[in-house]
Image (cartoon, rainbow, N blue to C red):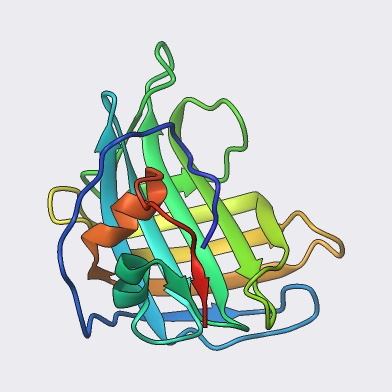
Length: 192
């Protein structure tokens, strides 16, 4: 479950979680394939004076437990969404505390900014990562202290073919996702 964080953060949060499962959808194709979303999680990652809201969508169940165990299933596909309000002077991100529109903002940005990335893993748990080039993430509910962000996205992926995808997310909070975001997982990841 490798990914590129929106902001450089450094805080490890640990808790046991099992059976968490949110709802979500993905409409459209990425690299010519469509895939069903069966598990959706969110968290707020904080550290070094910054924070970011994270949403993780997966084609396999029990994602929170597997993040805690540092395992990934073969042939699993992910959508990662990161949202923050970026201070123009300091370029420091703060996780959303209210509803709003978050445009895709690669690199430096000021104001509301989002990053959407998709990972399509194969049988060896590795695969390409593709970033959204343009689009918008809409947050319809934000609870930064509770690590829950509901909403939708409408983006054009930046890989070959410029594929248009849309989706919705209504996640369950998973603090382990914040640990993944901040690089706090230790040891090598297990492919199962």
